[in-house]
Image 1 (cartoon, helix red, strand yellow):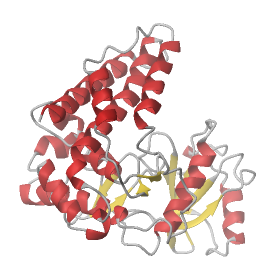
Image 2 (cartoon, helix red, strand yellow; image 1 turned 180 degrees about the vertical axis):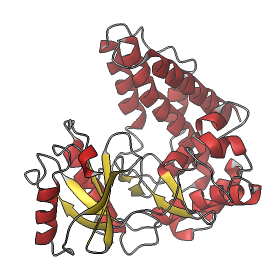
Image 3 (cartoon, one colour; image 1 turned 30 degrees about the horizontal axis):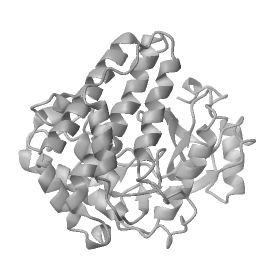
Length: 353
């Protein structure tokens, strides 16, 4: 299977030599294959010396920040080792770009699980009680992350938590404004945009406690165990930072499947199957972890959910803008613009309530 993987992407000779230098088990590399998952990075599974590995690196054509993002991911995964956060465990990281044709990479443990937004096997498919518990498990896994003391695990200098909430609205309005530089994009046609932005500025929480943020916490970035509702791993840590962990919870709520507004279809088989807990049940499950909620105001979760709708909507509008400029498929741009409108609609319903 290794013949399917371009040597410019993974040089297996260089990989084996580097692994030897790290003192990892030797021998031939076996059962090599590309793994599904992650649209921005390459995942390759293999075995060596009786041990299974997953290699993660950036795409073949590296973007400007790819290597820095991989270094950050590896650092966070290393910091989470020893905690009860369900995440792949880092085995070894190579921050040196010279080893693999300019690409930073790391090795992590494989995850035994499935992505419920792309497949829903038994017993999950046939048991609404399991699906309900899967939703609660998603909230509890996030609470485990929120409970981690980022300073105690060596991430005190990992982000810029000072002013994190204060700069969110201006940061993302500036991002939206930048899309106007794309020829063919007529500008944002998002009903409620200014209303939502103004409401967020006027109702921002006055105090909060920094912690580790995943940055893109939703069902598609979770792997569930095959034998039950347990979250096997939170994956795709490329957006991780030190910020306000309640925004992760807001992100989960902003993207939570709702049969009433079409978001259930976006969540794939799990969303369509239904039986999931309500947003209020998710918040209650998160609140069951006192270390995650100490110094954090769950009464303000509506504000965080609106911010998540606002931020994600603007991110998705970027692809719509690129599609208008001929730099992305038009059907994809139209779909994501529709999702953006749905997110802003959800934000306005939360504000009204």
